[in-house]
Image 1 (cartoon, helix red, strand yellow):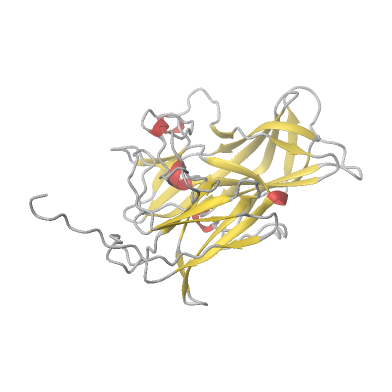
Image 2 (cartoon, helix red, strand yellow):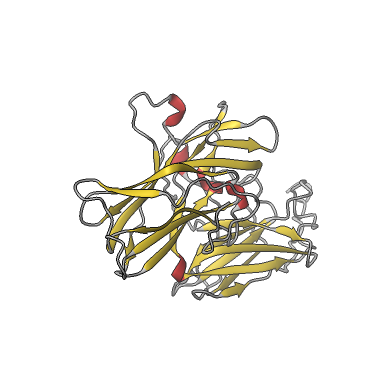
Amino acid sequence: MANYPRYSVKYGVLLSSVVGVSLLAGCGGDGSSGGGSGSTTASFAVTDAPVDDVESIKVTFSRLDLKPAQGDPISVSLDEPVVIDNLLALTGNAAAPIVNDIEVEPGEYQWVRLYVDGGIPDSEVQPEVGNKLDLFIPGQQNGNGNGNPRFLQLNTGFTIAAGSEADFTIDFVLRKGLTKPANSDYYLLRPAMRLVDNVEVGTITGTVDSAIPDSLACVETDADYFGSVYLYEGDLTAEGSAEPDDVYDPGIESGSDDVQDAAGERPVTTANVVFDEDSATLRYEIGFVRANEEGYSLAYSCNAKGDDPATDDDIPYTEVKYTTVEAGGTATVDFSTVPEVPKEPEEGT
């Protein structure tokens, strides 16, 4: 495996050719800046927020496009597709590169597109129960007879400063973006993503008291599931603030490949709590959290397994906490409140 010192790559993620890329401008020019000293470069990597009931997700990326605010899109063609054997391994601060140090024009950009080769053997999902199934971008499951490749588009504007080495990470929020349509034998990967500038991000980590998932108020029976932490923008602990909510996305029901939240406080991303053998504690980690002025709220739930983005689930949260995040820093937020067992209604009420 090649050495990618600027990224954390672990759990045996296979990366095919990443360094061999060429830039093709949509109209005129070759998209490069000539490679002299002071050139402007950009790198893009991917990470993910976990999802339940799935063991592994293999994804093959074949191309990346960038859209300058002024001018035609720039296509980054890979010499070979980038294959990520298991996207689920890239949690917390782990990420895998798609392209490294490509030369680009400085300025404002409007969007990023990731092109995916859908279906087995290129892209596939291994459920916890059953055989591997095809993974498609919406529209690929019905064939692609018109020859147009399918892509995921992230409509987040960003800036690349002149002479800089810009470094971005695309976070796949799989709890929202990975769906299995009813009565189907395939999964769909929709554009539930967020783009972060790695210069502007920090980390949130912490522990969960082991007495919490052991509580009778926690109905999950999976011995390996210890709950989930949901991340929200702003302070939800302040008086009169909104309540934390699940990942409901009504666009799924209509088959839309756009991701739009319904009214309500919806999470930026989520993280599963895991048992750390070295410290013998229950821990979580949320990486690539953008530093902001509003800060973030975190809500813990021991009953969030299977949070379905197609339904507005009534998930109970045992504790909500607020923190701020500094670029390059790590904030620690621990959860210790054991939930009360709901009382049985009295007879005759």
